[in-house]
Image (cartoon, rainbow over all chains, first blue to last red; front, top):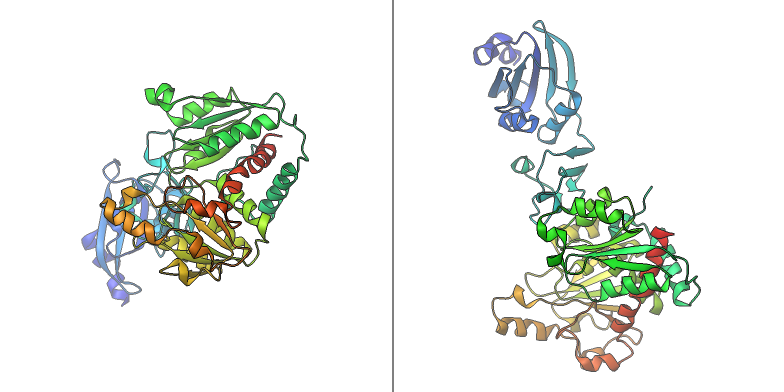
Length: 157
Length: 299
């Protein structure tokens, strides 16, 4: 099983990076959503590599996202926990993993997810960002009190 | 810290009881009629209102304060495209507290974020209407203890915000809920689950007659005509949910009938003469309950 995670095999798909962040153990098929949730799709000058359905000993299949020359902050990576709580973050400096950490579900998220309630004040031209409290039942809109219990990714702004 | 009243969900049982106790003292004329002398209440009603607006205005007047309002929405700056956030910041400079009704859910919560004075939610779209819930509880408490009562919720339970808020508040008092509503207008599943998880016993019934002997409170809400494809089906449905004197012959002697008003056809006018009818009392209770709310946030 370990052979499947051999960096050389993976290297065929996604090259190693010198400096930056590797987000590993993303649930298979969620890599594009991870990129979306981080707000880096199409808006970053750094090179971004995405591998999906990579064979994984632990997970069967997983996705990987590599972002060169940028170290993501804790607040940024914790958003990932909403869609892929098993993801791990590796901070790379000079090809070496300098820091390895898991993701933690944040208590509150702002400006990331749109409230699906069309009657919610957060969906108007008011000068506010959407805001949700993260609860075991889902995301609780602090304005209209609606709860997004499933399919959070389709509501990502 | 500025005190606001936005949602009944922000209250715990002790806070509700305290507010209702204060309303009772006010009702017994035990209050200082100059308690809010010199204070100004701004009433911002972006949707029509009769009872809520007038009772808030009466409440501030009885406490020695005055009220100001925007008049019609068409004539105010919102119609010119001003955001609610800006309106609230401006009005905060004119008044000591703001009462707001707005068509968008969460509008009062937003107002509270931008106001430098206390905000009271007087209804935000299909969302919250805490002063109505408090006066509903107050009216029930005038007739019986709130603990463990059987409450029938009748009518449009899907869109009726007063029924939702009342159900949530009653869960704090271990009440048992009986719901009777037309198909498609049942209690939202999310609320049903939420209340059940809080330990509330909820039973759905097809007809009011199934449960009339058991209940202590019959809470009737208006079924809106626009929820039905045509007038015939509307009349068909509403007639089977109508409260009549004949129906109430099977009710407990102390059972009370409540309605947030305005009623249309839900309650037979002959019921008005029966001791069960408490909906006008309920409406009147809006004043002492709102006086207690104003004292809580403005004093």
